[in-house]
Image (cartoon, rainbow, N blue to C red; front, side, top):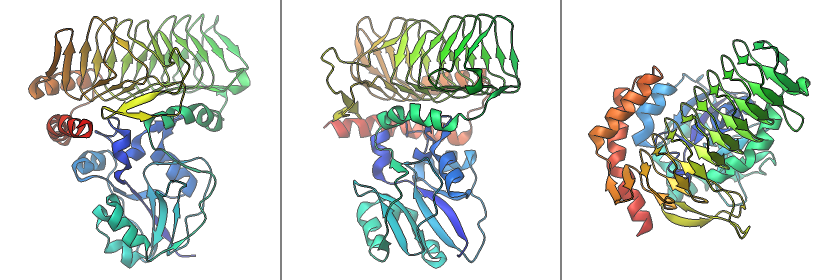
Length: 412
């Protein structure tokens, strides 16, 4: 069998995952304890040598993950960045491809010479992509492969993915006297993590992992399945219910259920967050609450880029873009979408869609000045000892113009 290198590509499906994909590639989205990229690499047994992403994202993505040298003389397996891979797979044979039930390209394996001649933009354009596939053979797609089409797909899959992934057990960090572990065989407390007195880790309905140097403060209750990422802090009295993934360096309090907090975000105070995806550098003010269930118990329509999309789900909360902020007592309605660097300070419920780089008060909606947005972003990142790079700043500035324009065009 020839050597096969791995390349992960984005298609036009990234638009259905906005605002979460404005500042990151689709494969950098989280589900379970890690990213889609990590799952693809683990289950194909290959480290991605190339990430073929949108031109505007290339600098920031490559600064997080530089291209790697691939061995010469082998084929290339292209894998869609929206693939949620949950079991080991062998790449399609050279000269063949996989599609999902909706017709999206899942993966294709190309001879080296074909890959070397490939313009990455071909993969993001449906007609050019189909022309490429015309010279390949269709092959059966493994049943273990799922495609992420909308943000709520990540939430819907999160619980099962946590149950699948959280297989480690044992106490390596510190569990103080007075903490209570229910079904300790399904609990892992990693090195440097601390679980304070009065904490309840209840793994009776699913596993719990407290990752390295995370801290669970007194009287917090965590119900599995649940993952708390490195250096995150769960505040006193928090109620973290089932199917919750919390990434690195977050501060979390109040009540959370069936949600993903990507990383570096704050939800420190009382207030309910349910069936929601929160991106990075978000701050939810005290008593911010989400609604994740209609009073009719019907399925929920979600305002992707401001345009209603039927989710088919009965539980959908908020999709919150990077650097967004809410004021004290903010009410986020069922299925709402909050754009990148949006600010909400309203007396009543927020709209179901708040554009990126918007400043929303009871007096109405105003643009958020780029200079102020970057100043605040630099300050927020600096508090976590993260420096906004020149590439980050360029993307932020470009996005301040492009995102509101694209969102307006989608609604027109």
